Length: 405
Image (cartoon, rainbow, N blue to C red; front, side, top):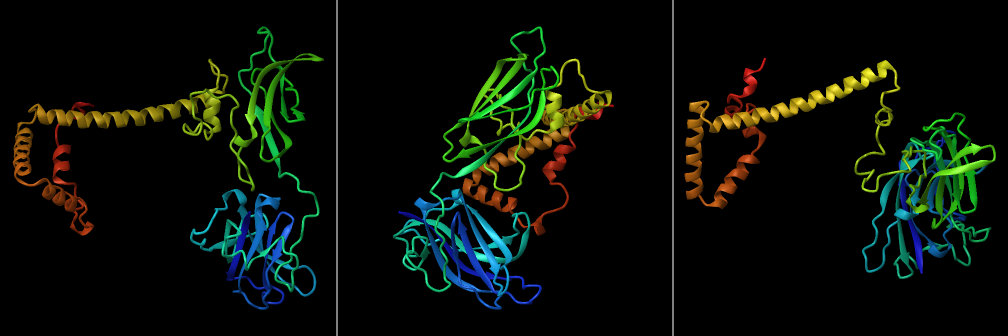
């Protein structure tokens, strides 16, 4: 049987209570409906506990482990100092004879998990079995009795239910919608279904092939996410008649999980089968570039927008032309070195090649590699700020760029 082990070692630099001027800290480990508490220390900003909690994996009811640091108060509610959150999917597994997992310092966060607070706590979290060295001395959720104020285990008050998640579907827009009747403009809406849950967006108020909704549809999904999200695009052809224009089926396990307020990038339901959107960064494209990509011909945008896009395209083309010109210039210089355009430069190059050939023929390859490595990795004190002799010689060679206006 596997257990989730949480080792609470110690804390440091805990902030004092603004009223009492002292800190009576203790740690509360919370996993779903199970809670465990350490002993509290009076007036100790750097407490040491070195206590281990064990939670049975078969009875885990949450995918988030929360470790709270609180300041005990004699009267009223205990003060909040900070917390650390762990994702259960990222907890490593350790089975003896693997070496013990070393504890690490974690910075405390506020209630929302957005701001770092003063104080740190040293923790180690891992998945293990009953053969783990920490199991005999650990307090676990299946303990028959608990004495003192070491750990307070709270058993589940509800039946063991699957882990539920909120599935938020933000339907933004659609483009290039083609109805069955090509002579009429479509007036569409989106229907989303997860299992027996069916939700619809509002009907687009105008008839257009590029409708816009920007509506949120909220579903409840249970792990292990075996259901699918079915999105159907339907066209209102009559007051009581709708026709299906398009349909896509998306497995729930492919969606990204979010446990904070970070932004999730929107995606298009329709992708070419040969294209990797992550590899091409199609999901992170700017809104203006995406709008330009799907603009009609001739354009429907304002004159200033078209001018701005033209200037941007011209600047990109200018940079490309500059790079290509530099490459062509280097090629012309190398060609001039071999074509005796500058007799002195070509003579020096031929003599240099002859000397290098003789030196490489006589000197062993290991010695050449050693000297080249020492020269390439020499200390900056032995390097000159001026360009090297071969680079300066090559840049002074003639090219066609010298003849251009």
